[in-house]
Length: 218
Image 1 (cartoon, rainbow, N blue to C red):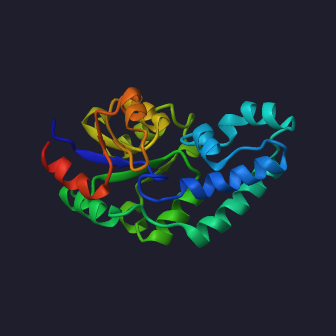
Image 2 (image 1 turned 90 degrees about the vertical axis):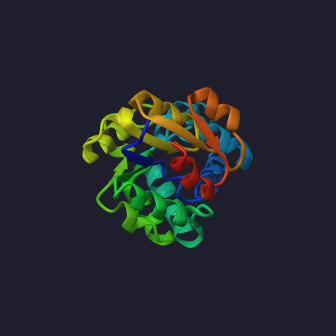
């Protein structure tokens, strides 16, 4: 099948943000009494919004997940992202190639909040590729693993989701892309190849520099 558009996840696919965000979350959960290693925190939360894991957090801390706590998390997260965020290696060249090859028919379909997406893409120099085609899971009825954000991105581009490629790095995201009807490729720079395939990823690759050649072979 010849794809008509490419839909990119953001965290872990375009920007190397997940250890930063989970680091803040881990620290704040420890302050609430739930002690986790960074690795365990990432295993528990990657691909999910914090609010979607409310029951797990409240069960392990014994405290309610309040709006004040969430606002403090966002504030601390944003400061660290502002200071530390970097792009995924080789992603600028990969996105430039895809943008040119598909005539700009690309989008960012993220489970994150819009402020975070805009902040990160702006800091690493990717925002202009996606300006006007950024979709947040916070702005659709259900975020990932539901398909809503991918369906919204495809609809905006005027594409049938089944003619779109989604690029994801977590099983939660792969599940969302598959549920939308897209073909999903898994980016697995730090392992998870089998988990991505089990979630429904058709192909798995480990370096963004390989994406243009993989697309050309289709």
